[in-house]
Amino acid sequence: MGESAATNNNHHHHHHNNNGQVYDISVTMPQQFSSKSVDDDGRPQRTGNVWTASAHIITAVIGSGVLSLAWAIAQLGWIAGPTVMFLFSFVIYYTSTLLADCYRSGDPLFGKRNYTYMDAVRSNLGGSKVKLCGLIQYLNIFGVAIGYTIAASISMMAIKRSNCFHESEGKDPCHMSSNPYMIAFGVTQILFSQIPDFDQIWWLSIVAAVMSFTYSSIGLGLGIAKVVATGTIKGSLTGISIGTVTQTQKIWRSFQALGDIAFAYSFSIILIEIQDTVKSPPAEAKTMKKATLISTIVTTIFYMLCGCMGYAAFGDLAPGNLLTGFGFYNPFWLLDIANAAIVIHLVGAYQVYCQPLFAFLEKHAVAKWPESEFITKDIKIPVPFLQQPYKLNLFRLVWRTIFVLLTTVISMLLPFFNDVVGILGAFGFWPLTVYFPVEMYIAQKKIGKWSTRWICLKMLSFACLMISIAAAAGSIAGVVLDLKVYRPFKTSY
Image 1 (tube, helix red, strand yellow):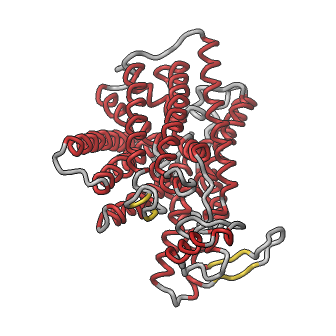
Image 2: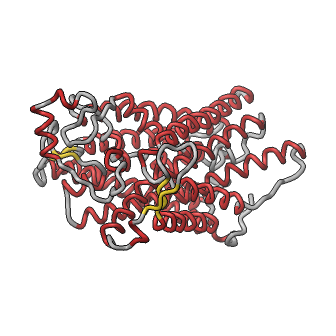
Image 3: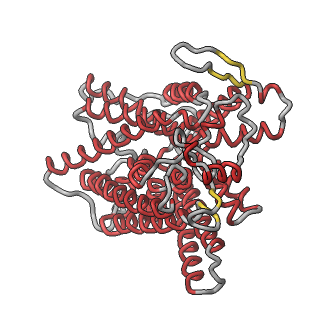
């Protein structure tokens, strides 16, 4: 993020961070910097505030996770469902405030900045924890890429199927294979992945945000309309009834529902990157705490509405993916708009998630083999309508293409949206949302062992670990059940 200054020159693999020097100049001679003022770390002045930060978080959070919420609440019922959502939102808000304090090491106003989640872990915990954090983060991103490929293909098929249903007036079951759609999504991502740098995809982010609001609102609207039309609120206090599912299935599915909800809420992976766009004074942590509060409240209200309305509309039959589970057939054009919005959103979101992983690996490769022409050489290609020529890098072309191919093939092998989402939620939730923020906070604030504060934080961490393990177990059980009736690459809906 924020390395636009460094990327304009061709040798962008030598990052000069002349912190001290730039800082001194800007203190003594502010008038020189009036044209383009600089922050205390020599990077261009950050301009973000509470509202931009909240917008970023809401954009990042309200995504495809919302589609599985009605299903999740249906597994838990009217009492446990909303309660679990409130608990998750509280934990996420609390640990995010801890994480916000880790943006600067030492002094909250002038301490050394950490630009990414891993930088924060490096400054506060160091050692093997950094490697562990990186591994979890990048595995999680890899998983998200798979989840998004599945979701996008399901939505593309839903458009095709809803039109087919409409034409045959429901007589044709319209079965089709998901493979061509996954391949199409993969090809699109190979093209988009060639955008070299994160700061060049802000427009993609804005488009993605608008889209995610579009389809979430359509889902909400259809749920409300269905409840109004039937005049009954479906569902029960305890969730899906035994009989529809077996006793053991009920337990596994309730656990999986926890993973789905955790997935819908997780944004700690990008919190520090967002904090790095915020101006100071006031201290960035203060702004960020306000922003997390606003965005957690907005997201929770929105999620409650979507999840509860979906459950009220369908009861036990709530589909795993609200807009493609064919609970709704009409108005079919509205569903098509919603599903098209999902696809466009996922194309953008895939890039927003994967770019940090791309950048990380490329930086490592350059550091490791600085002599290799294949890795470091940029071939300049003039592109019409662009000011600068496009810098084609062979290593980037090859490695990003392989990455996309891999995620596409795995998606074709395991196309189970709910289970994949549950697994991702479970594996990302505890380490990234709870464990690291708590550990960094304890280290940074030097909280004494066995003090009340320390015990409370550790208990919170332990409780969340248990939830994560349960959710992972539930989702894996879900995959195992799916595999019983499944042949690779032959999935049709």
